[in-house]
Amino acid sequence: VQLQASGGGLVQAGGSLRVSCAAFGRTFSYYVMGWFRQAPGKEREFVGAISRSGGFTYYADSVKGRFTIARDNAKNTAYLEMESLKPEDTAVYYCAARTTDTYAGSRYIREYQYDYWGQGTLVTVSS
Image 1 (cartoon, helix red, strand yellow):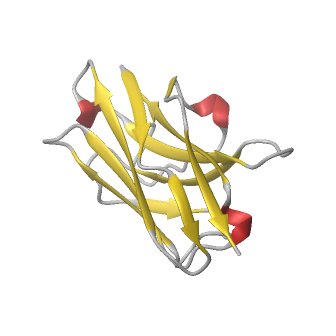
Image 2 (cartoon, rainbow, N blue to C red):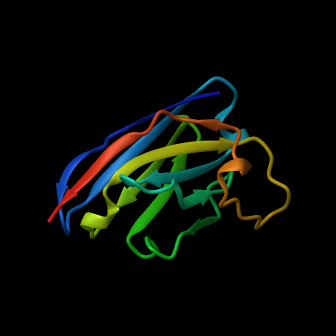
C-alpha cells in the first residue's frame, strides 16, 4: 500500500487543523492506521492509532483530549483532527499502516510495528 499524507500548514496556537492520509493499493480496511510526528531535532514519536474498523482509538498522553483519529474505509482515508494546537505540536506528521492486528484491543505505539509509511506533512503552530 502507498500512503499519502496531506493537509499540513501553518496555524496559530489554539487553532485547529485536520490532516489526511490517503491509501492506494490493497483494501484499506486491512490496516491498522497510526500517526506519528517528528519535531525539529527530536525523534519521531507516537501520536495515536485506530483499529481496522475504526471502533478503537488510542492516543499519546501529550495529545489526548485534543486530537482525534478517524477513518473512512469507503474513501481509503484516515484523518487526524487536531484542536487546541500548541507550538510544541509543531512537527512533521506521518501516517503509517500495519497489516496485522494481533487481537482486539492491541496497541501499536512503536515505529517498528508498522509496515508502511507516508511521506509526512508539516504542521507549524505559531505562538
